[in-house]
Length: 92
Image 1 (tube, one colour):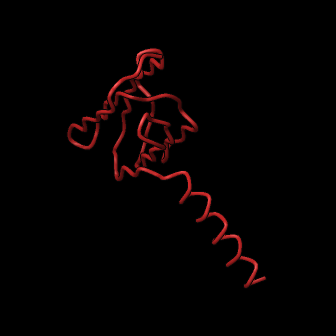
Image 2 (cartoon, rainbow, N blue to C red):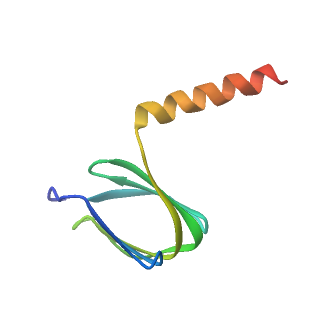
């Protein structure tokens, strides 16, 4: 894949267009996890679905109602999981 800039366009909270996408980690009705050139991205909402995906060009289009967009730092995600597991152990 050629190096592309990361850009996102959200129109009426319905149509999300992205560039700089390198992979799709998971795709569910309420959550889509993407890898981008600037880190992991979590898209949450309702009736989410991938309309278009071209990893060679780094492009993706997502349909459905978008409630939130979140960039996830991989180091923070690992630490957050560790904290949640430790809290769970306290209450067993």
